[in-house]
Image (cartoon, rainbow, N blue to C red):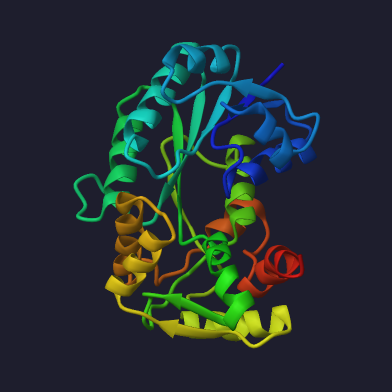
Amino acid sequence: MTTVVVTGATGNVGRYVVSELRRRGIPHGALTRNPERATAVLGPGTDLAQGDFTDPESLRAAFAGAEQAFLSCANDPRQVENAANAIEAAATAGVRQIVLLSTVGAEAGAAKTFADQHGRIEHRLHSAGTPFVILRSSFLMSNLLGSLPTIGQAGRIFLPAADARIAMIDPRDVAACAVAVLSGKSGDGETHLITGPEAITFTEVARRLSTALGRTVEYVAVPDEAALDAMLEAGLPSRLAEGVVGIFQLLREGINADTTDSVRQLTGHAPRPVADFAHDLMAPLLTR
C-alpha cells in the first residue's frame, strides 16, 4: 500500500525524498507523467503513480488511498494552478498530511515572481483544510550544477550574486527534513526554514569547489542584464530567466543570509557543507 505520494519526484529534492523513503522502507509512489524518464532517474523498481498536475482526475487517482503527500512544483507559469490542483486532489482523496516544499522569502504579492508564486501556494494550502507542514528551502546547492559547463571549460562561475552571503543547502538535507516530517518529526501547521551550515559568498564557494574538485575555480560577478542575456541565449524562456535574476536580486538584499538549526532539529544531523555537495555530486559529472 502506498502511504506517501511524492510529487516532483525527479526534481532536485524529490529524487532524494524517494531514495530516503526507499531506504527507510516506507511505502511510497512517485507521481510522474513520464514513467520512462522517472525510471531512468529513480531506478528500476520504483512504484510510479502516473499523473499530471494539469489533469485533476489523474491526480485524484494517484492520491487515492495515500496517507501523506510531498508536494513540490517546478517554477513555471502554471505553478500556482498546478499546486492548487494537487492540494485539492489530495484533500478530496483524504490525504491526512501535505508536506509542501516552498522557498525562503515566499510571500503572496511579492515583487519577485518565484517568491510570489510560492507565497500564493502556501496561502492555498492554509485554506485547504488538510493538515500540513511547510519547508521553506534556502538556495539549493544543486543550482551550482548550472555552472558546470563554465567550470569545466574556463574554471569560472558567472552569476549576478555580487558579494551576497547565502546559507545555501544541499538538496539531500532538504529531502531528509521532508522525510523526517513525514515520519512525525513536526507538528501540523508548522513552517520550517531549512538552511545550510553557513552563509557564504560565491567567492568563498569557488574556493571550496577548487579544493573539492581538484581544479581552480573562480567566481566572476556579472550584472543582472548580462546574466539575463546569457540565459536567454541558452534557450531559457524569458519568464524563467527573469525569475532566476529575481532570485539573485533577493539574495543580494540578504534574504538568505541567516542560518537556522532546522536540519539538526528535524534529522539529528548537521547540514552538509558545500564541499560535500561538490565532492559527491559535482565532481562525478565533471569527469564524464
